[in-house]
Every structure is written in C-alpha cells, then in structure tokens.
Length: 251
Image 1 (tube, rainbow, N blue to C red):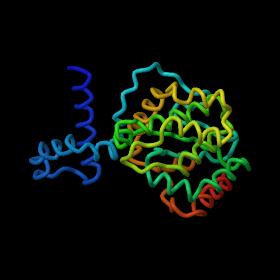
Image 2 (image 1 turned 90 degrees about the vertical axis):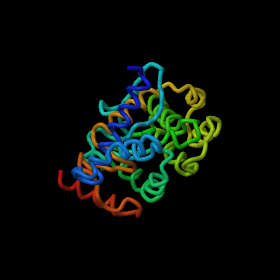
Image 3 (image 1 turned 120 degrees about the vertical axis):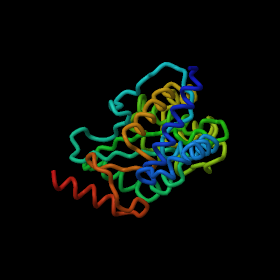
C-alpha cells in the first residue's frame, strides 16, 4: 500500500470516528449507509479536518524541536513554577481563534507577567487545506515556533500580531514577507526574522498537530486549565481570567 493510499485510509478512519463521535453509537440504518457517508467525507474533506484533525500538510523535512517545547508539542511561555498551566490550542487561520485572541490576549499577558499562569501554546496546522494551497497555518505556526526557539520573549507578541492581521479562512493567507514585517514590528530580532520562511519547524508543527488530535482535541480554540478543558465563555474578556485566578487560589 502506497503512502497516498495509507493517508487516504487514515483520513477515512478519522471521518468515521468523527461521525460516530458527533452522533453517538451507529444504529443499523446508519451502518447500512456508512459507505455513502464515508464517500461524502472523502469528497468534501471538511468534516475530517475539523473533527478528525488531519492537517493535510506534507512535511518532508527533518524533525527539529524548538527549544523549550514540551513533550506534548507545546511552546511554553511563562514561569515554570506558576500555579496554573493554561493550555491554548489554536490555528492561525481559525476565525474563532482570532475572536478568542481579541477577547483574552491582554489578560493572558497579565497572567503570564504576574506569575499566575504558565501558557502552553499549541500552534496547529489543520486548516492548511483552507488556504488555497499556500499552507498558511503551517507557515504561521512555524514562524511562532522559530521565535520560541530563538527569541522566546517575543512569542506572544508575534502570536498576537498574526491574529490582529488574520486573513480570511479560505484565502491565501499572509505572505512570508508580510509575516516577516509583523515579526519585525513585534520586536523580533532581524537575524530571527531572516529565517522565518525557512520552515525549520514545519515538520514539528505537523507532528504536534497530529498528536494533539490523536490525544482528543477536536477543534480550535480549545483551552485547558491545569489539564481540564475550560467550558466557559471563550469570547468575552473576564470569565477565563477568573477561572485561572480561581484555579491558582486552589493550589
């Protein structure tokens, strides 16, 4: 079985799992129509990507892990001894991630600065296939990973800039030149800006993306506080901060 065939089979399995997860156990009628459903999933791809997590990216370069990255595939920002671990799973093409960012970024920065939270940022790339072939999610996530590796104090600034200038889902995304401009404006040193387009961590981004979905992530943004999924309001300033502060007080 060739690589393309294996990948297609993997996507189809993820499609079946996604459908089962959304609808509950399959009844006999659904089983009878499974072939039709799987064919539809294979044709449109959207359900597989959103619910199953396949990135659709091909990263053939060597696996290089950014300095300070966690074993689970996150970029760690903040004090290791902080009482709260705040995990943030996002895709830079995801419009709801942009909405989350606009509501919460200032307060998250404060939580990091005052030592309340250590952020573990998971930059995913499962929306690559919705950027007109430019692999924007991978390129943006690779840029953030590169900054984490070489100028870690600028990670959140670049992440914020990418969302402030977020392209529309389904478009071509930002060019490498535009990402470089945003990084420069965010204070990233020029020697780091100069290698953002090299794709040094593209394979790591894809591996981390796939690991996140295999571990149960089903979409973005997903937020966890000390390992527990946050089910509160993601799009209004205040509720997440109160939840983090409460968790810190319980430590």
